[in-house]
Length: 489
Image (cartoon, rainbow, N blue to C red; front, side, top):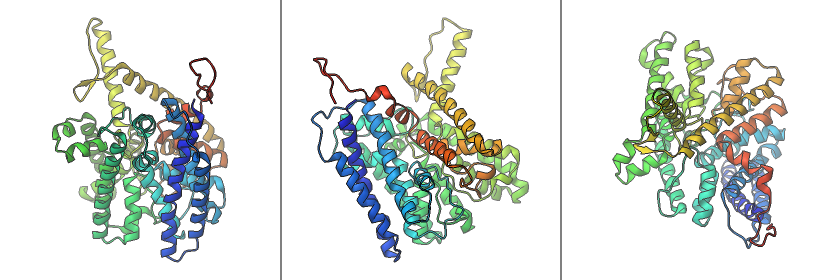
């Protein structure tokens, strides 16, 4: 493990957070809120910590996959620890674990909250709370790659460790250009949504907050009743559509931009993602129609809830705790399906489930026809065995962590519905669950220990387990050996 290089890269990334913290400070100044001083303090802490870690570039700058994992794990924890300071030091969230829970929920785009209400918070704090969604949605480190000059070799290991989904690839010859393209598309979609919300009657501040939450598929709102506050079919449909759009692999938008329509529309994951979303919306609409009066009204609420759960956003226009059992159970299943690989959404990912389903079909065919030679393919391209094995390995570890989390959370004594869906909502980066953590509930009643478990679940879910798991594995931190057998630092 090249520890000096890991710490150096982590320091450079934390310095980026120092600049990001100046934005909510400016919001505080604009609205004459004294809290802007606490954001300056947090920015100073980030600049100091980042400066100490990166003041000197190591002689050995070579990094491999394990250094990429460690950098991602350390950077996300460091960014969250510093990002929580304005909540805690200002006194609006007196307990540091609660403040850490809130900001980790922001950066991981989970949207779970310990706050019973948000409308009393200063606008600067509301801005930072939702802005963490926007930065964390595409990836904090992808953002850093777009602004920090870095070699392709180092960039690839970091990008592979952070970008969600089974695979990650280049859109341009240089990875820094790829990061810029991704963020360029991200910004364009965000601006389009911001304008459409303004046209729907939202204030500029509210439009920005809900654009951040939708683009990052996070779900933090500046209103206690979330999107339901606006009671507008137009706003509901705008948010529904853009949540779905941000849950699509961003590579496909690039293909559309360069008019490579064949590459975009032959993507199997896209059609499965859209198909699952449409079928689930229609099924729930039929199921809740007696509660909503007409099919179109029921479809408005079902489509919104399916989009917010499947893309792991977490906004709400209704308390689905009160819906029939079929609708609630279907939404819980969608929590695990998630969005597309390479999107801002969480969950297992449609592509990973599709790979496992195709691999299972192949094994059944082998049982029936042992001599048959078959392969698993996606988009008419055969997948290598490492990708298939990786998908299965991810599922096994995912189930083990989920089971362990539920067991540990059950020590708080909540009912199974609350305990299980709290784990599912945090591990899949969704936010609201069922029971006490439903759309009108929050996570404040959990103990400090349980909140730490849920914080870990949020990080594991957003980083897709391996960076955090392997980044802190003890053997990974052993020093590399030089060709003569001596150890490097």
